[in-house]
Length: 486
Image (tube, rainbow, N blue to C red; front, side, top):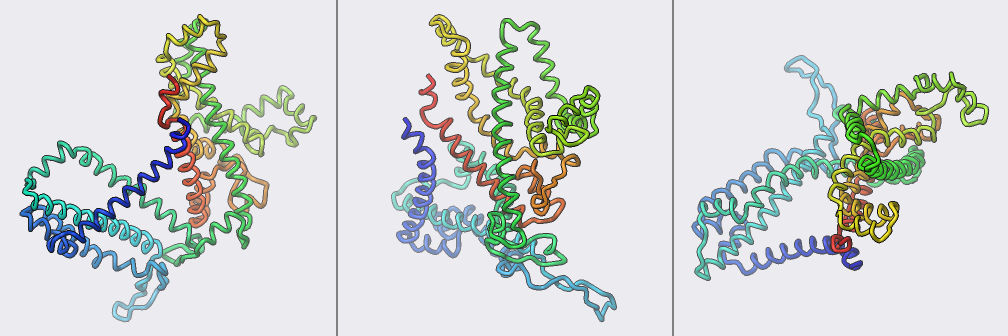
């Protein structure tokens, strides 16, 4: 069983490459063993279909081929030839003797070149896959024709896409959406990380160019003017992981314990208490966070109360604070602890609802058997309740951890305008001790236009989330988990 768990991710990756290898093998076989019309389909994509009297498909594939050629000539060739340099002509005003006006020259826009070249590459890659699949399909039709088998008409093929191939019909739009709105932006993020796209190289007024791994060297301590980026990166990454761990497991365990408490027969008016917690969910999170930020600010109501009761003076006398207020959200350490505590207050009600639904389906026979055998409440919780919760809510727990790595709202809304770093090395990198990687990335882009370093950080965030998700899902919901629990 352990070997199955360890081999799950490896088998998935191996299966992917095996599928790719099988596809390439099928293409090679089709092209080599296909007749003249199969080979002609490499030039005219509709040739094989026309030979087998599938004229509608022949027209569609011909039109698709023509569209790709037209796209290449009319659109892609404006940008792809400049992809290697990302443009060489900067924006300038020139005097037009014909119009007697100053006009902009025919300048290059580095971002447009990068974006539309990337878009062209995606279109070409998709066209290549379709072209290869077309060769395989027409070879399959050749073998069916030689064997005297029935070849579907175009209407029969369309009908099959709402019958045995309906899954393809359903997946078409989601795949297109993922490609356009997820895959292409990720590729753009990766490419920008290898350029010098920043405030000094902002198109269209200026050009940016390729710089190789310079940004990653700066991020990991490679020297140069941005050596502080490596200093800030280590600290921000460390806090991001600490925050994600505590934000996830404090709310997860707290939600389960609160749900058990409310479901206990000894709790009076459980519906009343449950309703109070649900009401907190109904309040928009940004409203709650902004109010809490004002409450715990240096001049907020909490500091006023602490000063009036003498708590601030006591903390100052014993050396825990050096100011006339308690820096709940304005000093390292204090801010870190307060952010986690405030997140517990915000996050537990959500987890309570999830845990309540799961606990209602907890196997009653197992609980009763444990009580008959003399198990204590804490033993039932540790041996039955928690394993069952982890089994059922494992995917949600993984998702919550990844979500907290990218939890922009809590950090930004609690600290923006309140926390100011006094660490010059952090300030030189436009970072703060309370920043997550995602809030640091946001500040670099929105306030300082440092897209190159933001993209490099974005790649690191993506890698962390992807690796953790793959590992956690493989361990928590891999093959055999249900049998292990039962």
